[in-house]
Amino acid sequence: MSTDLSTAAAPDGARPRPSRPALLEARGLHRSFGQTPALRGADLAVAPGEIVAVMGPSGSGKSTLLHCLAGIYTPDQGEVWFDGKRIDDLGDTKRTELRRTAFGFVFQFGQLIPELTVADNIAMPLLLDRVRRAEAYQRAESWLERLGLAGLGARRTGELSGGQAQRVAIARAMAPRPQVLFADEPTGSLDSLTSETVMDLLVTETRAEGTTVVLVTHDARVAAYAERTVMVRDGRVAALTDTGVAR
Image (cartoon, rainbow, N blue to C red; front, top):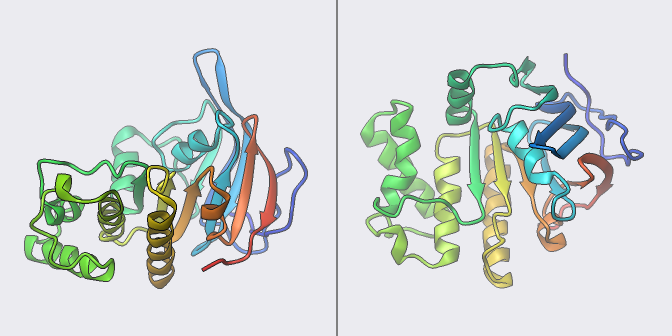
């Protein structure tokens, strides 16, 4: 069963009422860390190919919501649905496989492996998914070209600038052709000009691939790249606002 998606505003605590079938959905999520609640009944539905920005004050639960949607955290209560199937009740092995095959991830500091070359970092998730070595490295080189990094495949990641490293992280996330890209503060460590370059590329390439994006950010300029902004307050989806498409 899937919910339909809409960009219309919803009252505090109300579930969004979409008009398109949801690819990814959170239903009444609760999640606590010890005695501290992070989510208190959060609801969110995301349509295929949609770019959604998740904003909110520090400690509001926005990153916890992303991690539950991505199958990294298991909610204490509530359900997570992806592509018509419930995923929060899957075992660790199945959720790990889902994250490897259907989801891509870009985090604030890239989380690249410094001992490996740029090409190795991008090819690694493909090799883990048993893609042939030649094809994996061909895809890596293709993504480096698309992101303006041609010729850097043999470099170590420690030799890259922050903006270059984050573009490599995008390439690594996109090379396996994920259905959903999760980005948690992907420009948080970058200056404003580099952030704009990175977001331009992220949005351009995910749209070209038809990839759904869930983007957590504290920066309104970054959120403006999304088609819809979700505000999270006190562990609940408090409001939805149309942002328009900035790029």
